[in-house]
Image (cartoon, rainbow, N blue to C red; front, side, top):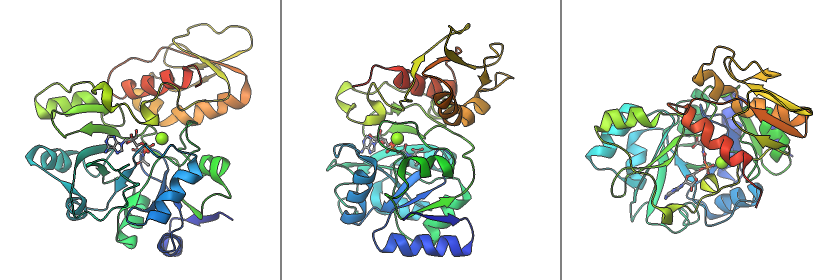
Length: 310
Ligand code: TXA
Ligand code: MG
């Protein structure tokens, strides 16, 4: 049985209780819903991989409430501290050297010497992390390879019966996953996401390098991911027969990511509209999305959603 928990004192207390018993709680973050388990607890972390059907070689993001907690698990240099001070709480994940005394389950980091960590900005996520008073490993709360969840009901559709509870914090405002920045060595953009790469580059005063091919070990970086059931065709301005067209800006479509052509609004709507289109037709077409700012994250997700299924 999966408990529906509301974002209030009782809901948070119940969620903490379930987490302390190695249970899994899906919770709202500003990006997508995360599937949280105690990052120090092998059983809880193993359950995350099991509930999602996620390959074990793919490490998880550790969520913490504040900087003091972050420094218990990861080694921060001046650059990392500066980025954290600027972009946290928020949709940026930093991959840093793992502290030898971190005490995290080795499953979280897939036995790597690095750890991905972030402080989320959503009040429900922060309230849960503070009340739990420990690190939560949390991938997106969806079956591996499928469309990420941006509402509590998306989580229930994919994982009901497989997890202990869902903490409902309403629709996610950012709508795409966090930007992942590798800081072990030269700053590398490991995944485009909710913070525009341009903003990070402006802050660092340097260009981010593309990830080293060796680093591509993660489902989020795999060719086919975020997949709807329908076949998806990209950069379309006129639909074919039998296709439902997702519009953007001047391309009106049957449904639209943003009538005004606003990329922030489009990101917030993306996964919900993909799910809606998936229930309307077997073939989905989607309008061109400008490839800058958060548009890069949208195009990254769309190209993986459209990729041939492995
Ligand atoms: O917005 C988000 O980031 C959401 C919410 C719930 O916080 N979480 C999320 O987690 O998207 P997930 O598991 O779907 O994606 C985590 C990504 C994976 O692509 C994984 O490979 C990468 O983070 N990652 C984790 N640890 C890493 C490490 N040590 N080195 C490189 N990549 C890492
Ligand atoms: Mg994911």
